[in-house]
Image 1 (cartoon, rainbow, N blue to C red):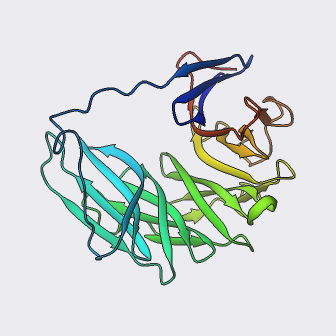
Image 2 (image 1 turned 90 degrees about the horizontal axis):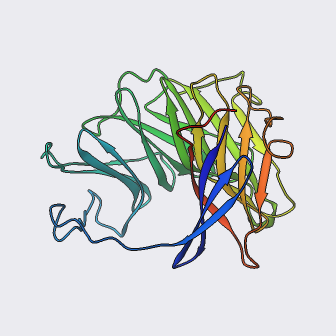
Length: 274
């Protein structure tokens, strides 16, 4: 299997990481022109339901419309930006009863799921296409998962009815990669310890910024992020164990520059496979 990740190096440089034989290709990031047919001059500014400073951190596309997720005050904030074929605009906030913020949003069978933090827990909000609570989620539509320490879900991937959330647990230099796997909002207990995985990759701060499920819900899970200043790509088996067929003990650390390197995205190569 070959995987492509993207690592941020400087404000004007991106490093595309081809992991497998692990050649590294660097290219200057070029800014394309804004699409004049989208919003006003290619830009949309959206004010959410709660008067506050709104921050958008995640985005996905559904039914020719763009869904953005972030924070609105101390709640999850989501908005549907009308697209070319779907002109309806929806906005909503989700209250978890504790300060919360969404960091990513992904598509589900019935709508979308936003992930982030609430208090010190992973937080997930399952919503339908109109950004209303998804009534098909049995253990939801709001789910909180504790790890015994402050945790933030920063990325999400969906595979059928299953949802993968990835981020970090702990704080400062002692943080570890954290993952949780759900089926209709319930933790998949065969994954890690009761549905949770905590992976202390390095002595420094370990964070997952992106996650994918490769192939199917029975395939490996891959995350991209950072570990002690190096870009990190890690793979886990269906049961949450480090994948012995990937990198060194399931991890590939890419120290590209003297500065800190971070991978923010990962995707399966179209011609991939082991």
